[in-house]
Amino acid sequence: MSSSKASANEKGPTGRRYHHGDLRRAILTAALDAIAADGPSGLSLRDLARRAGVSHAAPAHHFKDRAGLLTAIAAEGFGLLATALREAADLKEAGVRYVRFAREHPAHFQVMFAPDLLRTGDLELTTARALAGDALREAVTAVPPEGRGADARLAGVAAWSLAHGFATLLLGHNLDGPVGDQDPEEVFRELAAMLFRHAG
Image (cartoon, rainbow, N blue to C red; front, side):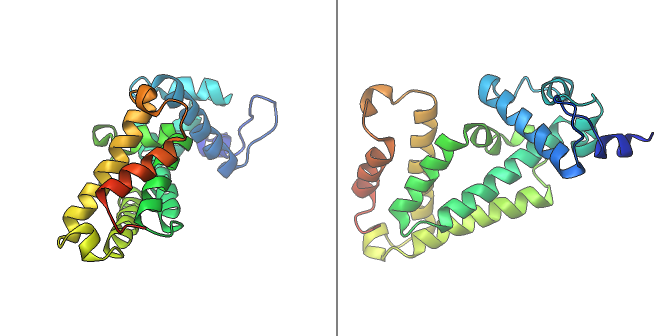
């Protein structure tokens, strides 16, 4: 049996056969679990195959190599982030959505901003990243100049820096003291209000 046919009809840990798309999803899920536990640097395709209960060739069939797998994860993450940002009513809530995304998808978040691990020219990745960037820019430009300053591009950098920095510090448990038992999203709303007076 050829490797492509084997991968399209692979048995999972329960003995059921995966369909082609299910197998790809199973490998991605196993990778996300591994990254959440140990970070992306030690990820190996062979270990993922073991975790997903599939043949050692299956991850390579779908993603070619580790960089391909991590690139797929990053692309998926930026797509999810773009959707989250577009659902926000204003810039402040876009920042809240950004923080919420990082909390709900910590493995994606780690990989998305590690360009040394990715195929940065990958079309799916660049498209998804552009969609997320466009969503943030739209939220920034919707704020009146008196609330964000005359330069919308710099305001976008400031908004991204605030949300990304807060999310990164939060995930690293560096804000356990200052945030304490408070809702991190409410804390972020207060921070955003300090920076963007008319952001929502």
